[in-house]
Image (tube, rainbow, N blue to C red; front, side, top):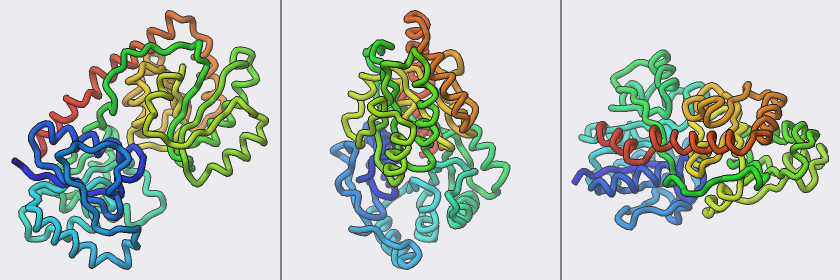
Length: 359
C-alpha cells in the first residue's frame, strides 16, 4: 500500500484549497492508498470531513513565521517524512515547496507540487515566484488546475518536473434538485477579500436593482474575511438595503445552493473557481468575470451560463439581467448543461484516475 502525504497549510480553514485537498485525499483512500494529512500549523479540527482512515497531523500548534522557523521547519518535516515512511509527498501550494524540497534531499521520496493559484498571481510575494522556479527544477511533477496555466508554467520555467493539468473535481455529487427562477436569489460564495471582487459585484448589483425585473430579487453572499467592513459600507453607500445579505461561512453550504436561482463569481483572478463547480452540481446557471485563468474552462458561454468582460460591472449587470429574464424552458436548458458539464469533465472518479497516473 503506497503511503502518500498531503502537506498543506491548515485544514481548519474553510476555503476551496482545503475542500479539494480533503476530497482528493478521501478519494485516494478509497483507491487503497495509505494517506496522511500534514498541516504546517493547527489543522487538527478540519472544516471538511476526512475519511476515518486518514491520519491528520500538525507540525506546529499555532501560526508561525516561515522565515524565523525556516530551518527548524525543514528539520521537523524531514523527521516526520522519515518516521512515517512517506513515499509520495503532495505539497498543497507551491510556497510550501520552500520547506519540502530541502527536507527530502537524499531521501527516496516523490515530490509533487500542487499549484492552487495561477502562475501570474503571486500576491506580491517574491518567495512565491522563487518557489515556483524551484519546484520546476527539483519536483517530480507540478500539477496545475487548468491547461492554460500549464502552458504558462511551461513558457516561464524550466527544469525536470513534468507539468500536468488536473482540474479539481466537483465537491458534491450531482444533485436531483431542480433550481427555479422563482426563488429570485443570486448567490455568491468566497472569502471577503480583494481577490474575490465582491466590491465589483455590489456595484453591478446596484445597476441590476434599477431594472424592474430585479425588484424582488436578493443577493446572498456567503463568506468571511478582511473586506467585510468595506462591503457593509458599500451596501449602505449604494442604498442596497435589504436586497443584499452577507452570511458567515457554513459547512451546510448545500442548503444555500438549493435555495438559489443563479450563481455569480466576481473574482479578479482565480486558480480554477471551485465555487462554480459546486454551483453546477446543483444545476445553477453561472455568471462569472472571464478572468485570465479558470472560469472559461468550466462555463460554456451561452450554454451553462455567461462569461463577462473582466472587472466590467456593466457587463456583469447586463448578464445578470439577461439570466433573470430567461423563460423557464431556456433557464432549465442552462441548468441541465451545468449538470452535464460536471458529469463529463469534473466527476471525482475521473479526476482520481488522473492522480493515479502520476502516483
